[in-house]
Length: 637
Image 1 (spheres, helix red, strand yellow):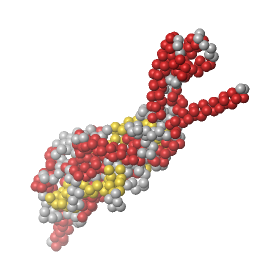
Image 2: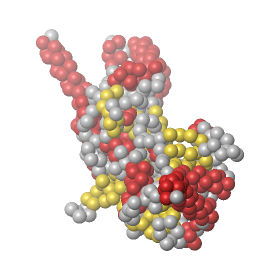
Image 3: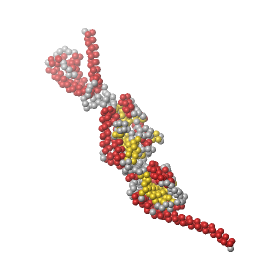
Image 4: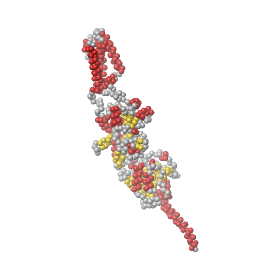
């Protein structure tokens, strides 16, 4: 009997243990299943997701992989319920693997189809994680999919599900680090974190948001308060609450003039500064103005590296570039603010045409046809008067020609009053009236030539500029492609070069040495002409014309708000007013700097010896010829 009991015990104990273990696992599984069902029936997550994803047209769900049956079952049931509640296309991703969730009523979604939706909060992301550390590491990796497609315009919801079978405890500080990751790496603002506790805590869930601008910390909210939170990134950027926004701004004429009245009182003047100041006022941020770290000014691209303020934008060291820039392809991850205020022409500054010599200026007072007619009238008059005088007196032809010249020059001749022949009197009277009119016109033209110097024709076309052979210098490397799009301007493109020199040095070279020309904007060119009057000229034909605007990093969370405010400033006429005010101030400054060379035609001109050098030259030639004739007369007397 005892042996029979041993046999029964040996056979029954393993079965008993097996059944006990199965019952234990089944009870745990049933308990976990109940916890999952309780979570799916919990209204907290669904109310938050409906509010947060209300404007979404597509949802990307990212699930962290975990070899756990409870986790996989919970996530699978959650995805099914998500599709039923939201009724929008869902893309399911596990880390780097991309796949479409195979729901019965869900059609395959392609990336091209997804990108048809506009980026203004139409694409939302749900991150489902099993620990706060896993969420932090996932957001830290910005090179994987879909992290590299995250933008500040989308809505984000992080769901962290904690269970005793996989959660080993953690720190709440990790949630704040995750929020900071999203802000510093992706500029994401509209994000909510929900922590769901399954069988490890008395409470059911926590809802957390982050105040990026005021307290810079994690804030716990209740489900009732979620409806009062900003529903998009645009609402969050409406009031930045004094947040420090990094701005790069350079001294640039005529829109950003840096002035220092004392060592501690330095500020900018001009339209760019007024725009920045008003943006800071209405968005309620504190601008922190800095210069490019490398000192390369506006910046440019060298191979794969960006420099200057352009590099600060690309590498997101600043939030706004407050200097106007041409809207063109810089091959960089930047955006332009809208609307563009106006267009700016690119022009070429060349040396002013040389002054016409006095003798040539006087000869050009009348046309060649007039000079021929005047000579013909003089010859006919000389011959006719010679014939009439020979009838009554003996006179040589040379003497008669000199007397006729004196009459045409309205000189006083004593013998004219002694002429008795009526025919000669009529001839002399008509000649005197003719010469009076001609000499008055000649003297007035001569006075106008002296008072208003005349110059040779200026270079007004790119074709004439090409014929000069002058090198074209620009101070902005981004303008080296100005002449590239036209085959007719190939010679100009070959002569275009960049130099790291100051504006004043280059302008002095153009004005004084006349051996170069400068490519710049028309606004700056007009300012330069005021500093160097009658020495520089702007070629009328413009090679390019760009819209101008400001630069911000690609995907900036402030973009839409800035676009809105700039549009209001432009429509209200404020931008035009600031331009006019800056132009007036700079014109006064240009007049002060260029008054030594400025020739003001509105006031009386003080003549100098240079203005009458031709007259003195004629007098000297006349005295020299008279002296020679006098000596010849004395020798042959």
